Image (cartoon, rainbow, N blue to C red; front, side, top):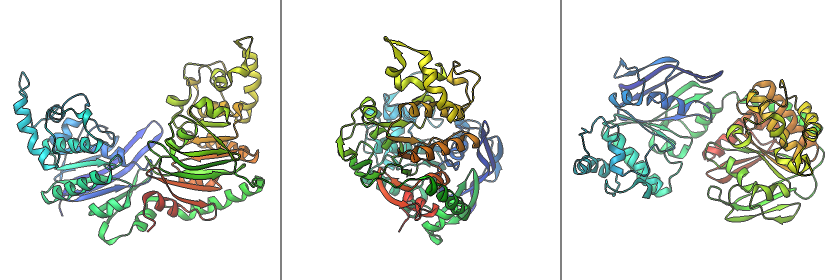
Amino acid sequence: MSDLLRAEGIGKRYGGVHALRGASLALAAGEAHALVGENGAGKSTLAKILAGSVRPDAGRILIDGKAAPIRNPLEAQRQGIGIIYQELDLFPHLTIGENMVIGNLSFREAAWVDFRKVDAFCRPFLERVGLRRGPREMVAELPIGQAQLVALARALSMRARAILMDEPTSSLGEDAAERLFGTIRELKQSGVSIVYVSHKMDEIFRVCDRATVLRDGETVGTVEVPTTTPGALVRMMVGGADELRADWQSARAAVDNRRADYQSAPLLSVRGLTTRKLRDVSFELGAGEVLGIAGLVGAGRSELGAALFGMDRATGGEIRLRGVPVEVRSPAAAMRHGIGLLPEDRKLQGLMMDMSVLENGAMASLPRMSRLGFLSAERERAALLPLYRQLALRCASFSAPVGWLSGGNQQKALLGRWLLVNPDVLFLDDPARGIDIGAKQDVYRMIAELAAAGKGVMLASSELPELLRCADRILVLADGRVAATYTAAEATPERIMAAATGARS
């Protein structure tokens, strides 16, 4: 097979973080090529670079063997490259036809809109993807599966020879996914190439011819899908299993030394918890236990924390604390019951960046910090400074805006807020994401100290080494359901990733 598209030595940095390090990909004409890897491996970044929405720092792209610099989406379109993002980039308050012709180099624009020409242009492509909707219907009125078909029809109308699909079935039901698979097969037969970015092994083995594996921004290798197995792909994705296992064994010894025996009754018991995203989730959490929450993007990790903290409304199930049923309909109710949440995005969901370090720390404990209805800076300092010293938080002044701190110290300020609240159950959503190694060690130490003090800690993380290091048990989520639960002795990177991708069989 000759290469339609080839990416060589692609590098991309965001500040000090390497999203891609010399990554490569070769796409043949008329093939479906899977792009796989763990969270943060660089899959979406590489797809965005090929589509022109992100510029690489290094490397080159070739189309039909010739260098083709792609600096923006219009240049990608001229080269015959289209993309369907996981979060669809459609205008919901415009019609299907308007969405398809905006910025479309294949549609000849005029001084005014001729809707009959728009209809005539769009209909063949809508029929090609099997969407029985008129071009003048509003996108906002479409189910997500049909909106995704609009995005695919738009890419075809732009004469795309290569279409990048980023987690294309993440929001689709089974029927819509089946229609998409059928469309992919038809596109391959007509010579259109597909780059299929996904973590779902069953889909990869159904529709893809080859698979390229990324790990930590680097290309590990490319394999023929019919001649490999899901387990082999998982091993390529996780890598370094022996090193992780050794690190886990030493960490487990430290955990066992500091942990008291759990109470006979669970601290937290969840049965059949169901929300818009979660489906029949059940588990128990003991006092002094660290329960890891694993899963790929969209699996429901953050949604589980939001449900326990009263941010997402539960439509079914039961939550018990120390055996007593509780209703958690709001964050205030969760805090009254002794449940805390450290959110995934500290800037958007956790901290007030223009407020001081002390003000951010005291935010969840205002009644304790007030005197005669007025906040007391003295009380804030007396309560928070010992906690900040415990966390090794470093800043020039605790009266300075928290936005002035480094990422690691911002995370410590947010963790200090919950140490002051002192909840019995604390859900930590990727607490070490985007912070340096030293700050991570401080966070891990604090997790161990919370568990040793008898707290129940739930640690959601996209980093397998982090879970293997800190957790007593690991709950694996996939598509909003519990896919598996492993004890520390049972947990391995291969088992966790296989459960998360549905490749255990």
